[in-house]
Every structure is written in structure tokens, then in C-alpha cells.
Image (tube, rainbow, N blue to C red; front, side, top):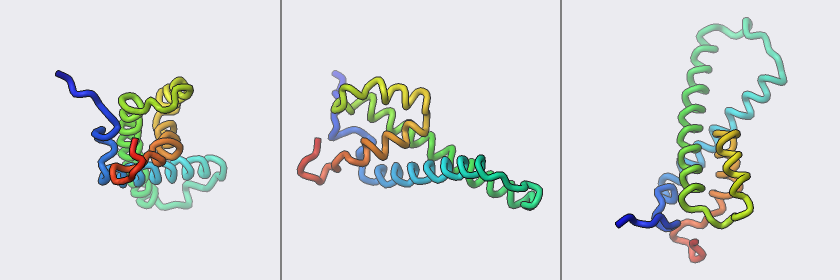
Length: 125
């Protein structure tokens, strides 16, 4: 018999993982902000030495990619399997996860997932 996923036992609500989701969302927000700022304010790439560009690109690329994938997988999994509180927002979040990808997952984390009480709270789902 298949166990029904409830909000109490979903893997994304593990307290240690919630800290990683916070870190992943902050890294994703920083990478997004950095990308937007760099696209608006043009700077001379030739003035930056090649090793600095390579190391900076690797650090930002790896941390951003890992954070984005982890955040997208966790938030879309929680939304798909557990979150049934916002019936009118189903299509919005489906489009956010599909079209917006990791940006949609970051928005879901900040606007929905962060507000979910932990298992130690009295008003747990």
C-alpha cells in the first residue's frame, strides 16, 4: 500500500534541509542580482585579468547552478505533492516553475515555503 504524502513527513520539511533551502535561495537571488546588474552596467572585461574572470566565473557558475537545481527540485516537489492551500494559484505556480524555472522556485520559497511552520510549531499544517 502506498503511503500518502502529508505535510508532516515530506522530505523538504526536514529542519536541516530548510537551512540549505534558505542558503540556496540567497545564492540564487545573489546570482540573479549580479546578472541583472552586470547586464545594465557595462564594464571593460579586458581590464579584469583572465585568472580572476575564470575563477569568478567558476565560483558563481557552480554555486548558482547547484543552488538553482536544489531549490527548483525541492520547491517543485513540495508544491506538486503537498501544497494544496492555494487553490487559485495552481496555474500561476505551474507557469512559474515551468517558464521561470529557478527564478520561479526562488519566488515560491520566499512567498510560500518560508512561511510554512516547522514541525515544532503549534500551528503546523
